[in-house]
Image (cartoon, rainbow, N blue to C red):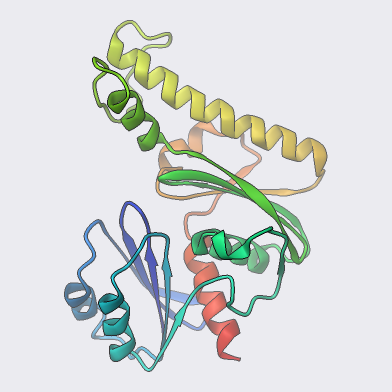
Length: 240
């Protein structure tokens, strides 16, 4: 069986796969290898892959390597079935590579735009077997925090659907500004991409994707597991 570690800025996701089939999934905000390993002890893990978008202490990687027979650390040096058109591939986040890999598996030969709405919002363009590059934008939580941090009086709030538009108070003004701003941004990306690449596939994923999915154009497909599935595929691909 395969074990997938997806260590993000806002939390860690783990999944166990038997071939291409996902057996179990776990999400946690705090990374504790001991607790996570205990939860996975019931499975016979043959291989593991680690995707980390933040700096992970070396001892954590050492512990993972000591507990599983084969451990693959995802990077631009990993063997991939698609080429990367990026000026400095070493600066490309592994989560972005995994998202493209998931799109490659699910929609072979297609033009695909993967929108990953997490701490940051990333837009990845896969054309057949070529990753053409992408864009990065602040995510919902980052925008709320920025308004609070870089002003003296604006409060730190969280997204809900209970707000007036236009805002009738400061909290609603912030929610309306941030949420509709993100929604308009994503929808305009979709319109522009579909105009340039007729018949393309648009995917929405990431931690905020469930909240945003009903606000996004219907031509966009909600696929919360695209990164996890991409990581499992890369692990299998590198084991060949």
